[in-house]
Length: 450
Image 1: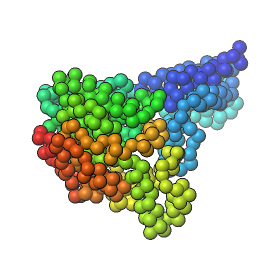
Image 2: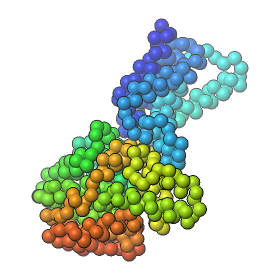
Image 3: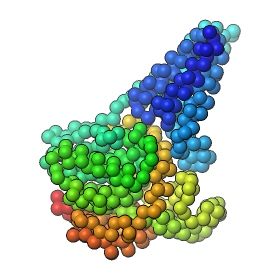
Image 4: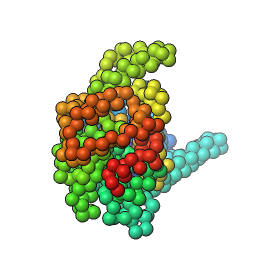
């Protein structure tokens, strides 16, 4: 009887991997993982009537889980990478999952076994460790299940919704205002916090729908299957159609930032009947050309700064594109500093994001980046979007990174559109909406006439 019961943790590992291959991503999944893991620990502890299940149950669960999810790919599930970003991914991926499964399992086994310790010290130590693990488990259960929420707007619109598994925050002081859909920057991007803390003024002029791209924020559970430019465009179109239906609009305004501006402008190019105008900020044009400029500039910067380790790494990797997402780590860590720009704000301290969404900010972005970025290397707007059938507006930073500014300048000069305008904010960098929010709002409302 004991041996079959002790196999239950392995069975639970298989089922957990099929259910949540990247670990629990929602409050319901986190609570389910905690409760089931604790129950498995209790069952193992009662069957064995010893302390061995405290270690044995997790040791059976973890390999079963890892082997079952081996078909899933991405930095959060691949072997750990010992680098600054790799450590963050390890902590917010496997370690966090351990607190939601292994810790309650061990705590359950500790409470259930019936053999008392032989000495007073061991009894005290055992109770202290078990009590601490239980308290931590209960605290995580409570924190992880607190739902996201957004403050109401009297007479207006304020809601967190989902479209085909994609998280969308919708806010505006009146449902009669023009509707604006914002597509954030990187694959797996989520700018919900930034839109609430820095650009809440847009809600006075628009019904603002902020999309969490597949893999980011509330859309992390929707990451699966094959991510491509076409799938990203389809996501934007699906959300657009829901907004058009929801607010009885024929067309809406589309705003794309950085990496998100690629699928956004392609959506506007392919489906002009759905959009009143396109607005790009930190506009990306040719990712491969941009990355090669970043590589050149970073090599020169690293040499000037005496960063021999970085010079050696970039020289060893050669010019991009690169197959491994971690090859882009120097860009993620040093590009803003190289161009004298502030690091991008995450603005995570908002109730619109759950604890798990905040914890998975980096894992979601890298998992989506790993799946999508290599497939965007062939995109070049010089060829793919030579013109738009709707007005094309751009709000760019005067201190934009050279890797993006150079391709944009040549593409914008040749772009055909019924109305084409560019506003440059001198003191802004790659993120005008967070660098200079008031000026960005003024530019956007002036360009769109709202």
